[in-house]
Length: 414
Image (cartoon, rainbow, N blue to C red; front, side):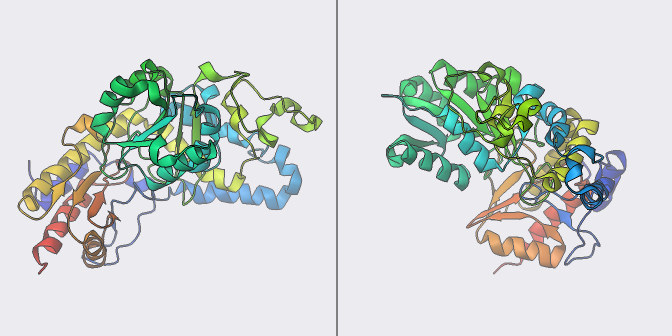
């Protein structure tokens, strides 16, 4: 493989990706005009189409006022349904199983109201030992809400320990709640195998897909987890704090014994304005909705999901494998002998597009990459730099810049 800058440019000619659809930030430093952006696992870049389409929704508000609920170009009353089918295809679910609503941790809490039901000996919640802190806070607070001690109820495991624990102590587990792709290491977990093992042990299985949605192909309906949730501001490029998504498998729809919080938007749309005092929830995941959706926040999600629908996750995954494999080769050549350890699995089918590097003083490394070389990477203190070549907008030349810059920064440290 040609690992020179000219070689990277040549690869980009044959495999250009979709960079022209996105606003690429200008570089703060280095010799190139645009940032080599590898922080899409934290916040994705803005699609160019967002601005015009969001302005259309703003114009309808100005032009119509309250009548926009029914008369806007994209009427607000059913607006969330404009996102349903594209979101469902993205995660491999039925439209009736998929809804865009709220934020990620709010959705996890709403779903745990229904699906974390500790009884007798079966009380434990399994999470990764390196789970995202918000998930840890959420499950610990759920344990306390049920009068349980979170220190004994929440079991933190290495990802390789989950199946053994379920086989050994599965009768104590009420809920398995793992990240589909681990936020820290970039490891892609075996979602279907863990889901099957959790169910075989009698547990409910849910997934946090914050780092999986838009990163790897998903088949939620076929794999059969009970529920899942994901955010849309990372790989889904829908803007900071963007509206999240939720999945509930159809086997749970309409279950009268399943507790669930309700509100204005969890009743049937056709009877919503009868103003009845008792909710009539539909037999779909929309029964888990509570409030009317924020239209102006949903607009970028709709725009972004259409991009994924047009290109397809299989094509994006194929390009992701090529880009990430190329970056790995470059890093092996440039920093293999330095004080850097790759945390991400080397097997391509066990990771998404993120490569996590363990290196001392990661924050300083990341600051210098940006200030001196125009390379934007993500850092998790104290010692992890996360580099994510996103297949929608990253290039081979970006990867070459990152590897070259990292070698320069590490090489001139005292």
